[in-house]
Length: 95
Image (cartoon, rainbow, N blue to C red; front, top):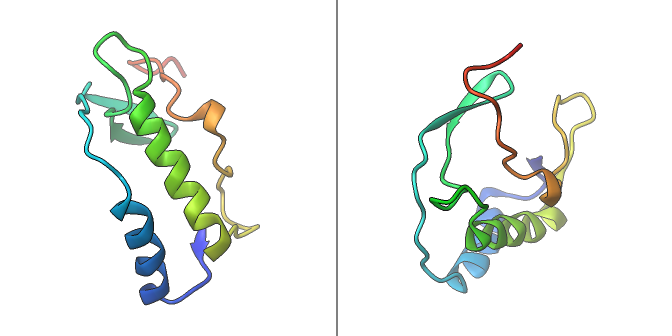
């Protein structure tokens, strides 16, 4: 996604959204591969299930940014799908 508004307008949207957010505990499960990139996995609880508070935050941010964002058709990007958020990727990679 790309912002379709000024930086100030984007900050205002995020400020409104995040001012209502409450703190929650996350767990760093280490580095995981996601496609061609890598990221720290802070999405899961120690038992391996998704952290519902993290999922709620991501859904809120994506929902809040949708009206001020555009998807670039030439950009290799898959629009956000909550059902696909942070699927476990095998490590080491199998491909």
